[in-house]
Structures are given as C-alpha cells and as structure tokens.
Image (cartoon, rainbow over all chains, first blue to last red; front, side):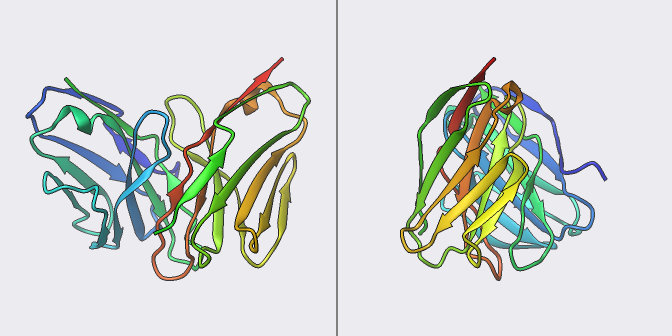
Length: 114
Length: 113
C-alpha cells in the first residue's frame, strides 16, 4: 500500500457549482479525517469517521458540506453551491485505531473557486 | 478547546546549522504531540511525535522535547541540509477515544547551501 490517496489533485470551479472529492485511506486504517488548509495556516479539522460512522463534525462544516464513507473504506466530501471562501486545500488523513491515533495525510485536493 | 501557538513563523539557517521550532499548547489534558513536514504541493508528512510519558525523543538528526509543566514542546533539527527546507507544523491532541489534531500555524524553514 502506498499511502492515502486523494482525487482529484486540483479542481477549478465556478462559484455556485457543486464539487466532490474522494479519499482512499491506507487499507487497514479504520479512522478517516477531513481537514481544510488555507494559505499560511495549519490544517483545520472538518470531520471524522470511524468505519462508516461519522462521529464528529466541526462547526467549520457548514450545511453546504457533506461527507460520506459508505462502506467504511473510501470517503467523499461534497461541497454544494461553492463560494470563493471555499478555496483551500482539502486534506484527508487516516489512522489505525490505537491509543495515540497517528494520522497519515494524503496529498490533498487544491480547490479554486472563481 | 485546544489552542496551539507556534514560532517562529519563518526561520532561515545556513546548511549545517541547527534549527529549533517551539510550540505551546493550552489544554493540559493533551498528551500526544506530533510534528509534520509539508513540502510545496504535498500533504503533511509525519516526521516524529512525542507522548506525554517521555520528555525527549530522538531520531537521527531530529529531536523533540516536551515540558508538560510549562505546556510547551520543541523540534530540534541538527546538521540541517537544503532538503530540510519545508513548512513544519506542530500539533496536539488528547489520546484515547477519537482524537482530532489541533495544529499550529507552521514554520517555514529555509536552509541555504
């Protein structure tokens, strides 16, 4: 296994359009996280899955954002009616369920909303 | 919630010098402190972490220290090389159960040949 993968790597869209990103975690990892990173900032937590259950959502995750992990494997993050403020790097991380929960990140999807 | 402060925001050193990045955290219940290296256009890469049951950890040219009383932890890179140039992030979390990471704002390290 080569690590966490994300698709697409870059997405340019017009304001008001919907976009969907995919994350494939490391195969034996049952925890999956989404983060958002803007220029000059550290990653900020958006939401977290353990297997297929979404266990926590940040207040950063507005009603326009939805995430799924239908079979406990890959996950999708959808943003509806995109706004220019949604432009950011969207990062996915996965971890194996142990006490310290080391998280390994994918390469990210860079979203630009025009 | 947790708040992590990181400094400096930029650090320039000559090849072979040492570099130190410092972070403070606010939640006394935090007990897991990873460090990530992020190169341009890539996701953060876990390079080392420290857990609250130890005060120092070393891996080749990289070392981390933790002072739980003062709630601060540091990354030390010795014998820096140009390929160490990147943005470094510290983070903190409570281990056990599920645990989300709270990140600092990052330090851009530039190592000049």
